[in-house]
Image (cartoon, rainbow, N blue to C red):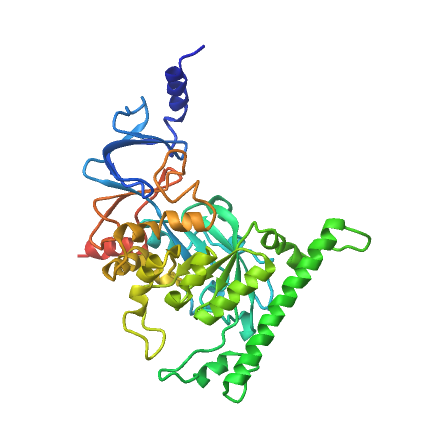
Amino acid sequence: MRPIGLILACTLAAFAGADNTFFLRNADVYPVTAPEMKGVNVLVQDGKIAEIGAKLVAPKGVRVIEAKGLRVYPGMIDSGTELGLSEVPAERVTVDTGEIGEFMPQLKALIAVNPDSEHFPVVRVNGITSVMTYPSSGGRGGGRGGGGAQQFIAGQAALIHTEGWTWEEMAIDRSAAMHLIFPTLGRTGGRGNFDSAMLEMIPGATGGTFTAAKRSYDQQVTKITEFFDKARQYQKERAVKGPGFKTDLKLEAMMPVLEGKTPLAVSAARASVIHDAIQFAEKQKVKIVILQPRDVLKAAPELKEKNIPVILGRVLALPDQEDSAYDESFTEPAAAFKAGVKFAFGTFNNEFVRNLPYQAATAVAFGLPPEEALKAVTINPAEIWGHGKEIGSVEKGKWADLMVTNGDPLEVQTQMKYLFIKGKEISLQNKQTKLWERYLSRQ
């Protein structure tokens, strides 16, 4: 029998020339899921973390990166973007985030992703290696498809790496979630009165009264329920496949949701709407993740009891209502943590994805423990979207999505020294750095 060491040496030799095999020497590793490790070595083989330890020796022929004084963290994950789907919002032909139709579950965001988008290099420079990209992710409920039509199911969100030649190569999960835009009832004005201006956003709400808005809201919830009931009936007929059965692409796309394999990512802001969304999910027996809640403190007891995670929106945001506290968005993450609600961060606008680490850092300044802020952009989103065994932390067997920095990645002054996605070193150049170099050298 051949010695294990010899077998390992032969295997490593085969990968020595690969661009996704390397050896980080004498680095400070911050796994996120375990205590930090000072002055250790990391062996990455074939794109995955093979070993971590202080006594590891670089195999012959493998590229060695001296990392003394540098830190290694898992790449960050933004749980709310339209990356690859929207390039210049003001130019309609560069935006591919949605289609006309109330229920469009068959649409897949992934196949519309443009790998050459200028946004990807920009966000990679700040250590963001994976994102959730959504069809119609911008709204907080009451979403609209193309042409201004009300839309409830916008399609399938994808979890992707931020680098790749094709969208197939970028994909981590082609259908990580189905995006449901739950109806909104409007909101309360600054003095506790119903804001009639919001009624203009609710189709069918007339007369500027709460009664009219509630009637429209109930009608929309009923419409969603009827669509799910139709999908349930299709599921039963599909199992039998009797005479006359015809495949329906829209209803077919709902099967993973009804079977509990794919969660519903539900846009719902206010506590009352979050409650209704939870009740709806329980009746339909489906898993949900709440997107961009703004009443976390009010909704927290129910969210914790039902073990429902949330994706918080931008921390660096203005108050939602005129009588809200100035630091409403700043303190929301700390409130979610103290309440025991599992959460991750999403920026929900391509313009701000690069600021993901600073959104998390602002939450730290307003009460969120630093280690929890880091988890909210690494392991938490990986687990929420069902890929905690592949990404989100520095652990043996996981993809080598790594950022190597000279300090805390949530600090503005920290510099990215190396970035790896699936073990491949990624260029830290982007449009901004190229322009900076160009005009810096101008005579």
